[in-house]
Length: 303
Ligand code: 13P
Ligand code: SF4
Image: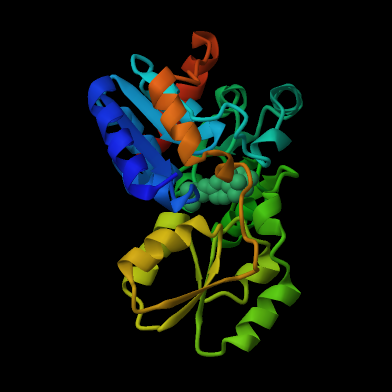
């Protein structure tokens, strides 16, 4: 679809339907360009709470749209494609977490927002990649179960003193694919570049990076960098915003197809169809939403 045709049609529909578009950095650049707000998962959760359009069209994966619905239950929340899920979120099953809690009542459960509402509802508090260290530091308990990302969990454990951090066995296959050999190779090929990575990357990769942060922290870091070349250790959609902010900088993906296929299921065609037909509506049963809301609100209060 032609860029201008898409932009015009989306703005017409947005006005007609009183819709607000929230988009994650990983979705297609054209969708980021028509969004009212582009951010990381923490910023999007905050935004979802305060927007007052009649419809929130959430351009991201399912758990993000679900979080928006939990925080703003009176709004109609739509996702352009209901099958766009997060592969890591699927690695934590509510029944398994329930069993862990029953057998280990002395653990405080900290759950990364990349999880289902059902898993959040069984957690003491949520976190995102932008605030995970701060959230865990703020807790009184000294035995923590970190769900589901073992890589972000190990990043937190390295920074925290005096707490045991037990890790769930989940990971993001997209960030996991960046292995230490590839990371070293791309660094050697670009000795003058700054290497930035997301904390969902493995420890061996984080250890050789110059900066580790959530997507918006990466964006902020790159905004102020003196470097003229940056190796980007996260999903390639982020490069769209980075190029807009710093057209003078060359961006190199840390591996050639650093792409989250789930995020790329959110296509411009599906965005248009979602607005035209008001599909696919996200709903969370109130008994689950209530627990999930408590864990997310606790995070927002502490970050
Ligand atoms: P952010 O918390 O940086 O938005 O990342 C979310 C995510 O899914 C990373 O893979
Ligand atoms: Fe989930 Fe990984 Fe995709 Fe992020 S990049 S949405 S963690 S599968």
